[in-house]
Figure 1: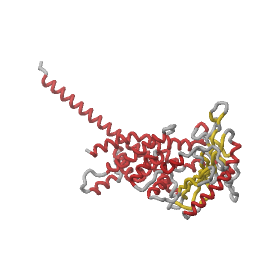
Figure 2 (figure 1 turned 60 degrees about the horizontal axis):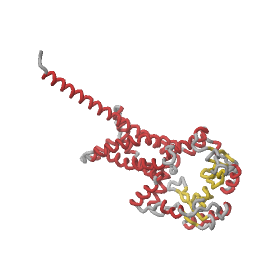
Figure 3 (figure 1 turned 90 degrees about the horizontal axis):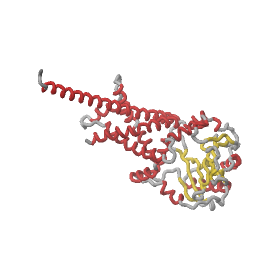
Figure 4 (figure 1 turned 45 degrees about the vertical axis):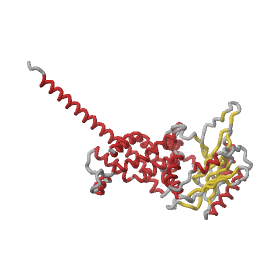
Length: 418
């Protein structure tokens, strides 16, 4: 009885998720090579490298960008790629309308060596051409292009997907316990020279088994990205894990401060000093900042830098983030790259695995192929449901025909003979 219930759940949950997982899988397959594809579709947004020439610091880049963005206040800069920096800005209020100025773009990129503008775009607007192909793919993947509630919707779907991972795994197990391993071994293989239905069934079942650990990783990381309170609650029940939301709650309730006493240049010096001190206390060294911004809400500067701490594969460094008061420079929060609790390991590894930031090119290829496999699992699941539904209808039709034939025969037998 329980198995029948799980079959029913897996069937209808699978149908509910199928279209979304196809979209998530196909877009994720492209996003595994997000930066590489952006260089193909929008090469103008990346600067020509200048070997031997020192790059400008983030504050200088903001100062160079400010005159190029009229009717806006520069709020920060990021440099996650060596040949590209992005400027964060906020439109000023138009005194004539009382509303923010319509700037005509949302992203602004600058040359990290010269401070010259590389380009601007309305993020994900395909009418602007190839420059927005990958931002569009990212918005489709992360929000399904739903404004406002896209992340919440995906978070709920991710929870359902996570639970369905366990249901699907259970359904691959043999019904009888005798000769368990011999019977279960069949579920891991694909029968050769089988018909279309059996081939799809084997691909669905065996593919789900072989990829099950990664299916769970991507499903649960989807909860982490889109529904963090649910993720923190569940992880807190399973292990020593702290809630990021709880840790930042006090910071989020700090009073707003639109005009900090520390200017950009002085704040950058404070950030560099605090980062050096905090990293040294943990036996780390920090690189030049990759992120520097001011948050009016809370009145604090945010400073982020890569550190000498790497993931175990050595391919990527772990970043550190700190926040300090915009008036006094006092340290408010330091987010260490080194795990301080067992649950912190998951917080570090889940995003890295999801976004293919570890294990170099081989893992990127795997994640790209995994996205295609996810779409395949969803498509084969729909095909299996359709074939079974067709078979049930056929059997129902045969039963009705047989019942009708019996009634006709009975009528003929009981009818008076002429």
